[in-house]
Amino acid sequence: MSYVKELRKWARNSDWNQDLNSDQQNGVPAPAILPEVPADAELFALPSPELCSGSGRNLQTIIRERRSIRKYSALPMTQAELSYLLYCSHGFVSVRPGQESIAALRTVPSAGCRHPIDTYLAILNVDGLPRGLYRFLPREHALLLLSRDDGTLTERVSNSLCGQMFAAQGSAVFYWASDMYRCEWRYTHHAHKLALLDVGHVCQNLYLAAGEVDSGVCALDAYHQTLSDELFALDGDNNFVLYAASVGKC
Image 1 (cartoon, rainbow, N blue to C red):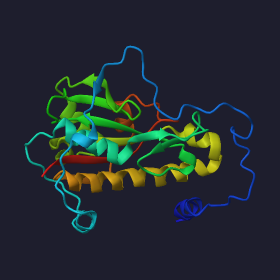
Image 2: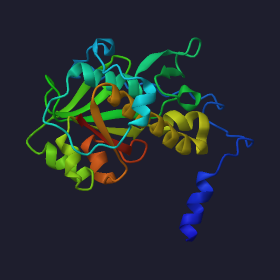
Image 3: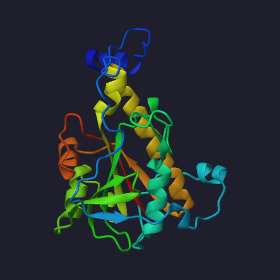
Image 4: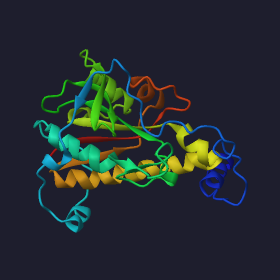
């Protein structure tokens, strides 16, 4: 129980009165607030989220009927639907005026607009997109292809999610990973708690947006850390998976 009590102590840490002595305070240049795009990247531009025709249900109904869905139809998700889910859950709006290098305004809140979370995807059944692993580029509203399916994608995704095969039978699996230094640069020892709060905002928005496009979501906190990080070649130190969710047509 001593370990559990230490974790409780960490979870309630909110002492903002002490000097953070952050890299920001020390004049260190800010790390990029949005993912960099490699020069040789293979990009798939997504349709405007405004092109997605939703169900027309009101927000209160969507919230009331929200459930975790673990069974999906064989229907492919459209690119317009995926675009809508990505924009609503983690889209880019603008940089904050006067703070272009350090603050991005997104469709979810984040402490200091630092947004230390990045969205990665395993695309399994989306019309017109090759099956494979991707990274979402919010400013470009595009997907960066990391690797195409070599025939093992379903197995690798399931293994990364502790054998939850249902997750690999949907349209896509969203993986949310940290870029911790984005937040540590400003908030030092508070950054890690803040990143966990941020990723919760993102997942909840995904649930609500999915209700608008007749799709189901199941949040997944049971994942294999090493296998999930290896899927996307994350370093496991600054960059590592924090949360995941499967998505599919109902």
